Amino acid sequence: MGNVFAFIVVLGVLIFFHELGHFLVARLFGVGVEKFSLGFGPKILGKTVGITEYRLSAVPLGGYVKMVGEEPDAELDPADIPISFTHKSVYKRILIVAAGPLFNLLLAVIIFFFIFQVSGMYILRPVVGQVTSGSPAEAAGFQPEDRVTAIDGETVETWGAMAEMISTSRGKRLRITVDRHGFRVDLTVTPQLTESRTIFGETIDRYTIGIVAAGKTDLVDIGFFAAVKESFVQTYAVAKLTVVSIVKLIQGTLSVKTLGGPIMIAQMAGEQAKAGAGALIFFIALISVNLAVINFLPIPVLDGGHLMFFFIEAVTGKPVSLKMREMAQRVGIFVLVLLMIFVFYNDIARILFS
Image (cartoon, rainbow, N blue to C red):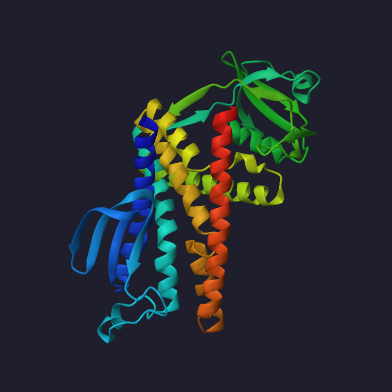
């Protein structure tokens, strides 16, 4: 029951922000909205304000904003033409459709900003835990508990920054300054090209010196503007990882068995809820970015599919034919149904055989 409740909370927040984006930008451009629904299916609660019915529906697996004149072939009262979605410029229609996933990205930025402001930010300290035998670091005299403070005179504050500087050195000899039990020690080391694996299991060559992090972290307070910057950086990093994951799935580098559906999300939401409100909020941010990226995919029935048609219209100067759109919609629905069946199969297999 806890998993189900957490799942409904997560989906509810994500769907609300997504549909709110469509709704606000539609209203900004003078498009009439007939329905704003959280969920699909039979209405549970509803209230009409102006021409808009705000409703909570029974199936919490999505939501929708129904706009006046949304269907190109719909019959319209001449009085409704000024507030018709179809009769707005293609650029306004692009912004209205794109607003949904963009608001999901905005939600992630807001959540990350809130976390950084309230809790601060964890950084992995550049402290050596182990020195690999036979490595350049061993030859240079590195020792466990050495804290790297600078590379070629440039201050180092995090393990990630240090690793990046070594990786991009192209094998150039480096002067690395470390703090060893309160004493400054300068070490000279030449990074070597070594074979390592990415998080996707791919083999890559990168420059390393042969040290392993001690795993020591610091919780640092950051100011307002730094938190704003880091919230965008974090959102971009998650979005980039999501895009790369999709590409790897298409290429076959990443196993399709890693895909999960509603059951997996419910399980993960339940686990995060048990870990505390902070963990659940962070999880919402991650899923929100994933939802945004997926919605931008050029698949008919998704926002990205609609955007694809509108971009074609913007280039050619005329809308894609209704017959072509209907055919593409059928293909899109077929692909999504197959995907849903597959992820449900993955979820069930994961439960049965884990």
